[in-house]
Image (cartoon, rainbow, N blue to C red; front, side):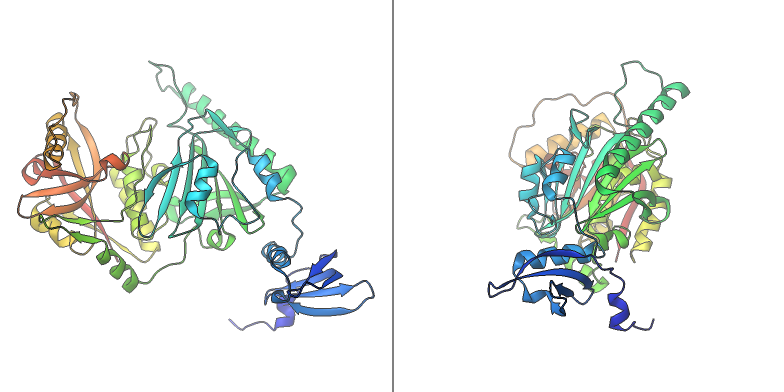
Length: 454
């Protein structure tokens, strides 16, 4: 594509006609009106006497530079909505100034009342499950998720209503009329949220986020360098996501790292311990919460570890996860495969049951294994007691239930000396690393494992 002349680029941002007092880096002041803000970080100013000058952003004091950056982010349109007004609108202390993206993640989480869910060398996330007991934008919110990189906030997500969240009286049968009632409640929630935002931020534009089966249509507002996107997914859920506009323009993807950089990063996560344990560190934890979302939550963890943005709610939708859980694994694999491919990675299936050689080959490369199993009372007892013994603890007496059911977790380590593998479940930090004998694992394996390669 040919590069447009600078004079044409400057016309992309219209004149704003904003008069204000400007201060330069030496403290001198001048009254001038903004004629045009240019993509090359210069501004055309017009004084009261009619003199026009083009001035670099760096000429001005920090407060004026921030103001100009906001104009540039909003295509030269003045931001009439302050961050204080946005906090009041949301009913939550999200902002401390006009930019969320330079805030330390833990600091932003603290003022929003979110607990740390996971912190690795590369990622950080905080989550809360108000389950409708709190409101954001005047609407009951069920889940809040704050995602960060090594230092600063990268995105914020709210789920307002989801089929798996809507409380049902005990004994309620999911008849067509009950499901229809759920759909009406979800649609009403999304409509109310849109109607709450429009008077403050104006009419949204239609946009889309994600790829393939994970693509969702959204209403999008751009405010002060923040893309605010509201998604109403046909009776499945209502979600609102906030991220930098440039990330939204990339379908939610962050700055992509190369294959070589990712290989180096995953290898750096392999920890070899003196007792023979080989374990992958830095896999983010995602707590599936009160829903039976073990499959979507576990895939989100793996995808994010491999630098692929993911959301367990979208994954659940793609895999037709029903109310109270229950995921079609083949549909999840299909949706995930498309997402992995779109991000330049490869999803592979490993046939057979986990053994030390198969597990070691992947773990040594820093690649976790997605493991499909049947969770039985005997297996739950075996992994609980084995993990306790490893810690030098006496296993606590507990009930392991009578039923068996399909389950998915990550295999994250092995020990050739002891014949054990390490697993990680999406139930919070306490379940991030548990150990079980390979012989016990093979009894419940469904004969299918998956890995994501560079």
